[in-house]
Image 1: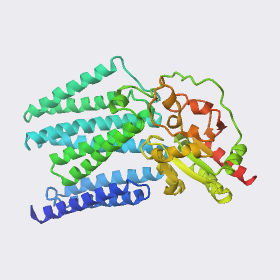
Image 2: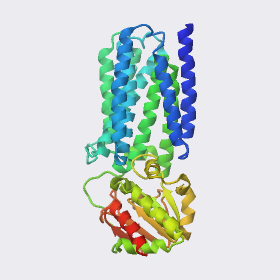
Image 3: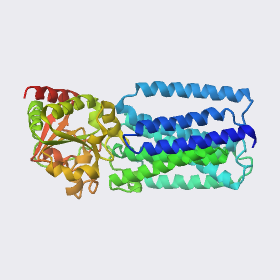
Image 4: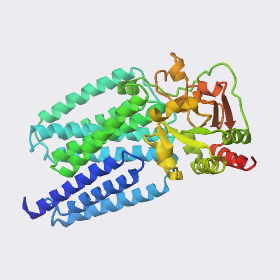
Length: 465
């Protein structure tokens, strides 16, 4: 192995420990920020010591390419990370997932085009092919997810015979993949066709999925990217890629399962049922009318409550109202002694953990934030509940209407509170297009308007009491 080989492998071991420890810390909002720093340090260690790898040591051209790539990618990531708005965070996650998958697929293609994979043994050829497939699907699928979240694709499309076409393409991919594995050193055409078919499969798989399912899809492609990186790590004998890919793949797979469970749906249902597909039709709401109230009256009612549970949703992120909301909450706590808690649904927002990050940005203490299982038993005893921008995750139709597309999905039992206030810009449906029965409840009052302005008005209302 030599000194340099030992040094590089030792650094990869250190990086692996940092990856795993960082991921463990990301499991709690209290330690997530530090976990990201620890995992980032691990990636820095792995990257820096790769410059001493025996395979490239002393080759100036390799050093130049690596430095240029790091400079371009690092600069773009730094600038975009600084500028990205909280509402655009899901798009950025989807885009970065796709870039990781695309990079893994590119490594596989280079190995196959240069015939290195073919000379490494039958098992590694299979890993290269599978890695190229998964990476290509993740790359194309993540780009479609980004386009949907960014508003570049405003509708979901289902071609005639969608499922048959998807299955037929999958069969072709298997045939071409086996042909590559069984071929010798002259398969560049097969490799190229195989890669483009994997891209097409990613597009075909993602384009009919509705926006309501995007959190699960993003998580799934995150797992795909990790698996692709791990496979290609085996192909090029890179322990850092193997470990990082396995950690990301395992974490992404578990998160995908938990997200699907949070919607009470299987992954196959998410991928093929088409829930949340916007076909231009407006969902019919329940009978009755929404009862509106002014911000001052809502503030007065909440000021005299002993307990208040707040449910944030994507609308809070869109309005960038998290800071104004926290000002209102602080006024309730300090001036009126109200016990305030925040309730987070597993699929609230447009990506896993979206609402947690949003509230953390505003400075909301972690001990005020509760997940669905913890907070649901407290709604019946709560004097008031405040919903901001959430729709499906508080919709009683999930429990009461067997004909609803979201029937069976666990929800936050907001309607059980004595009084319910909902901040909403208009009377339309949410992202999934399913009408919310909560808005028509006897104990529900709607506060119409931009969430940021309404939260400011609520705080002003408290000063007049």
